[in-house]
Amino acid sequence: MHIVYFVVPCFNEEEALSETNRRLLIKLGQLVDSGRADEKSRILYVDDGSRDRTWDIIMGFHSECASVCGLKLAHNAGHQNALLAGLMTAREYADCAISLDADLQDDIEVIDEFIDQYNRGCEVVYGVRNKRETDTFFKRVTAQGFYKVMKHLGVDIIYNHADYRLMGKSALDALRDYKEVNLFLRGIVPLIGYKSGIVYYNRSERQAGESKYPFKKMISFALDGITSFSVKPLRIISNLGILISFLSIIGILYALISYLAGVAVPGWTAIVASIWLLGGIQLLCIGVVGGYIGKIYSEVKSRPRYNIEEFID
Ligand code: UDP
Ligand code: MG
Image (cartoon, rainbow, N blue to C red; front, side):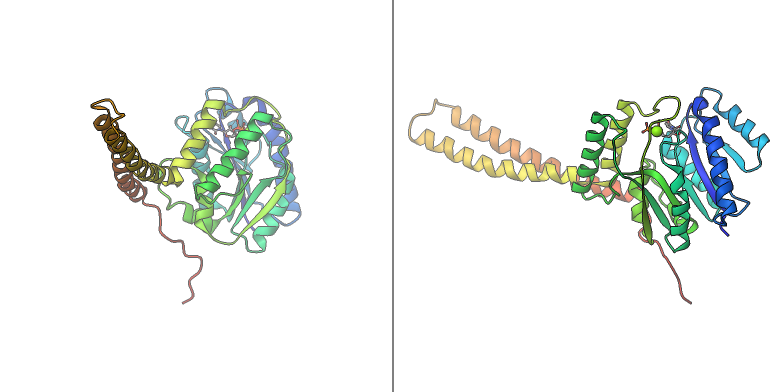
């Protein structure tokens, strides 16, 4: 039987935690009873430098019940980093880890299906949202737009999947080798490879407390996702440069013809021609420089170039 760890990042979640813990313990009990999880399975709360009583509450859970453990980060490292800290800790004890938010917006009843798919050989199981009816119109449009832009920029992410997923030990081991600092887990996990599965679920409202992702954080998270996975924006500059250089030839011809036809004010031709040509050349040069920066950028990340799934000796 598998040792399953629930990894729950918490930032100022004092209002939500007791209900979350109650429901997760029930779920864990069910998993153990149905033979899906070993008794050594745990709920691992990661306190992401909370400024309220979150850590005291977690310690309270731990003293009441041995299946609860906690990890406290020294400062607010952010959701993705907190999640990684939890997963890397779970990796040492567990066969698989399931990451979920402390507000239990993600339906925990599908965890059984997560584990069943894991038993059928899926090393990663993605939780994917069915509908977005509990979101505001604004969040729905921006979030879906984001997934589309990412796809367009050539980033392989699972549509409507956030950070609700199961990862087996091999996937966690592989994840450890992705050393990048700007962490965007939902972009990295598909890169790891391995057989994966999808489980659909409905997302409900946050049960207590308020969102820890205000609009500003959401935007910077989205931009991080794009710039950490795609150098296409740099290529767009190059293409723009080529286009404008080409247009400048037409502009110069036009200016020359006006000059020869005698309809141009003296001096106009030279000014217009140089503005066009220089503008295009400058953009093109920035694009070339950008191309090299893009290379440096991907080298500096030193991501692993492959992950071995199996080795037959
Ligand atoms: N979280 C965290 N560190 C942060 C911000 C958020 O650990 O700096 C946790 C938070 O406690 C929650 C999860 O990340 O468990 C998702 O946050 P939230 O539910 O507020 O995001 P939303 O569902 O509104 O996108
Ligand atoms: Mg939430």
